[in-house]
Image (cartoon, rainbow, N blue to C red):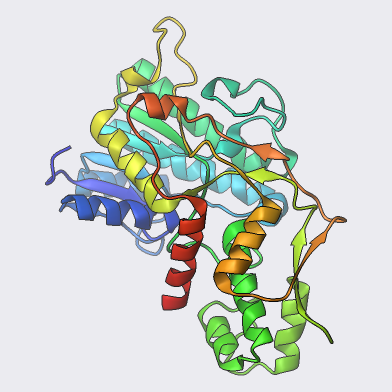
Length: 361
């Protein structure tokens, strides 16, 4: 890529897309384009085709997706498979049709089977059943990998798929109904600390920025706020404030700072081509690339780190009547290491950076 190349980032306002935009800008790329959902509905094939015809991007990074945590994935199963399939089908096909030089498709490590060997290498794909709660999302992302792979084989395109592990960072989703575990715990601990300190001005400021089920800080009574907090596991009793966490706390998870992920993606766009992603030209499969740290932490350890970084003094309560989900999801990053990329930010530093960002916003 040249620094003046026109690069379209689909989903440029989200956690992934905003990190990519920032990383590319900092490296000197000056011709970045993006569209909000109000400006371009990626589920509208005609609109997507017209956008590519008008703008003629040379490079595309497909970071747009419908995403969420275990509750959202399991609740909105139809939306997760339909919307993700529509978005990626439209963008990938338009990139082929309008002769984009290179496309990067971002998926997720939830593509791997529930009982995949740990750590999970790229060759684990499609070897056994998926985790039930996020199966629709995972199937959509697997379809995206295979679409890129198949277009490359048939049409000689240069479409590459990367599968980041669990991401966190600036512009994350802190909606307690739909967020992933790490941003949810950051916000819960922050609100718990505010309750401890009887800091209602900060609570109302937080709710005005990100209401919970329509409960904001401008006109909600304390009783209403405490009730919605209680529903989402932030409980103020006679003793210490308590933060409820689903499951035993024993599941192990891998987390990657979003700007590390962006650095890996830009590195891939600059240095890696489709032919670098496989070794057997007679059997081209599993060409996607894991983007991860190869390190894991238990949910209990994660919660304790967040509690310490936020300064919450109350109790962490693990509700064992709630599901744990998959017990381990550790990527094998050997492939991306062999291609020349390694992560930089460790979990303790990343959580501190994320909380400082949250407070600044």
